[in-house]
Length: 45
Image 1 (cartoon, rainbow, N blue to C red):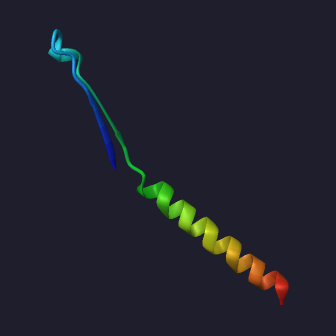
Image 2 (spheres, helix red, strand yellow):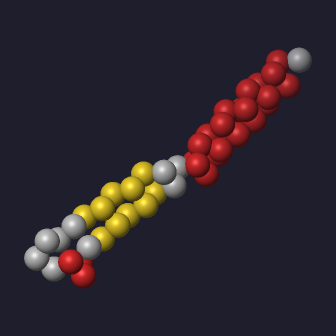
């Protein structure tokens, strides 16, 4: 998870915080690579 916080000292009510969760992307990437490898081994035989 990546957190970015932007603070405005003159106007504290305008503080912004952005949170990005990379866990679903990691699961997708691992699953994609595994399925691709599985399909390649099936096609070879």
